[in-house]
Each structure stands twice: as structure tokens, then as C-alpha cells.
Image (cartoon, rainbow, N blue to C red):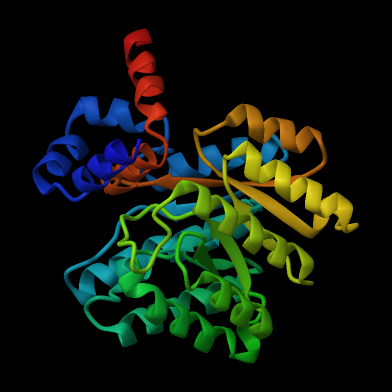
Amino acid sequence: MPVLRSAFIALSRNRQLRGFCEHSSIGGKLSSRFIAGMEIEDALRVAEAVNRQGMSVTLDSLGESVTSETEAHRAADVYHQLLDLIATRKLNSHISVKLTQMGLTLDPALAESIALSLAQHAHSTGSFVRIDMEDSSLTQVTLDIVRRLHARTDLHDSIGIVIQAYLYRSKSDIDQLIADGIRVRLCKGAYKEPASVAFPRKADVDASYVQLSQTLLQCPLYHGLATHDEAMIAAAKSFARQHGIAPSHFEFQMLYGVRRDLQRKLIAEGYNVRVYVPFGREWYPYFMRRLAERPANVIFIAKNLVRR
């Protein structure tokens, strides 16, 4: 499995394969399990369907590092449209944003300015912006930007962040975020990281995830536990029951197209569930990371293609 994970992460950076997949009909078929569609309207249609099932949504316009300020503002415009449409259609949804898509690697001040405008827009419409986490080289600058924006008195309830359990630093980061009053989405992590910064063994990543989720559950803020791992979900549910933590105090978060059966089961049990719904034409890196996280998805997708 580690070999397959490394292979898929390497493939996620292959520009030639990306170009072929994102512009071919077979690529569209491959991606449809995990991607809501290519256009905003596709994403909104899926969000409405997910809401009807009793689950909330995070909308993500796919795309990562941009090469110009113009591209960064163009990407931000999509999110501004989403915030307005979420409000007008009364969707139970917020947005998830990668700072590299907002120009972080070009100019951190540009990314911060765009993130500020999105958070202010979210505040004005009663929504919320989750700043996604990328590879470990960007962890500190991402945290710094979110902490500065959250420190603005008008944005306290409008911006949150993602923390990856496989990084050694995540415990101290979460302690600081809780002290700052910043809401966290906890995931295991989907990037290839060296053993100098991240736990190389799955067992250690799992142990870190359980420890960090318990820290989050005990604090007064509303956090999200992002996982499809039934062992991690069972551990969180057990800890919450033992400590009298109500299901309404937190939410489980899952990806569109992954473990729909488990999503429905958690809703039936009275837990809050949020589905991460990505869309857009730049879907390839996201798709390959989903295969890296769970190589068994390759078999599932192959069966779907055969059925078609």
C-alpha cells in the first residue's frame, strides 16, 4: 500500500498525464465518482441533493498553484459567486479554499488579501470559509494568515482551517488554534511528506488522529472530524459518549463519492455529517490524491467503468 500511495502521489504531479486526463472523455468518466462536475451549476445541484439527505456541504472549486495575479483573482471570483449562490438558494453549505489557488506561492500578501475579501463576503452572507492545508512547506504561512484574519473582530465566526494529523507539529498547532478560538477540520493528510516532518507509519498517524480528535472534542468550539476510517469514527463516538459530549457539538466530514453508506448511517444515528463537494476542470491532482489515500478506490472505479 505505501508503494501504491507513493506512486499515485507522483502521478498527481505528472503534467502530461494531467493534461490528457483533464481533456479526455475517459478522464471525465474516471473523475465523476469523486468530482461533482465541471461547472458551478453541477456543484450546486449536488449540494442541494446532499442537503435533502440531511447533510451539510463544503464546496471546493478545484485548482491549486496559479501562475499570475490575474489567475488568482479569477479563481477567487468563482468563490464569490458561490457565496452569493449559497445565500440565494439557502443551501446548508460553506466553501473550502486553497491559498496557493489565491496566489500564495506568488505573493503571500496577495493570497491574504484575497482570503480576507472572501471571509468578509462569507461574513456578510452568514457563511464560512475553510482555509485548506497543503504540503508541509506551506503549513506555517497558512496558519499565520488564518490567525491574522481570525484576529479581526468581524471575522471570528467566518474563517477556519484544516490540520493534518500526520505532521509532528499538529498537536502544538491545535493547542494554539484552540487558544485563539479557531475552528478546525482535522484530517489525516494526503501529501507525500518526509519522515523528518510526518509520521511514516499508518499506526502512528492513526494514534495522532485519535489524540487530536479527542482534544478537539473536549473544547467548546464546533470542529469537524474528516475521516472515512470506521475505527477513527468509532473512537470519536466512544470518547464523546464517555465524556457526555453531544453529537450536535461536532461533525463528521467525508468526501463526495466516498462511503455514502457510512454517511447515511451516521445521519441515522443522529450525528452531523458534512460532505466535501469538489468541482471544476482542474480535477486531476485532487483525484490522484484520493486514489493515494485509498488505493482500493481504483478497483471500485474500474468496476464502475465496466458497468457503463
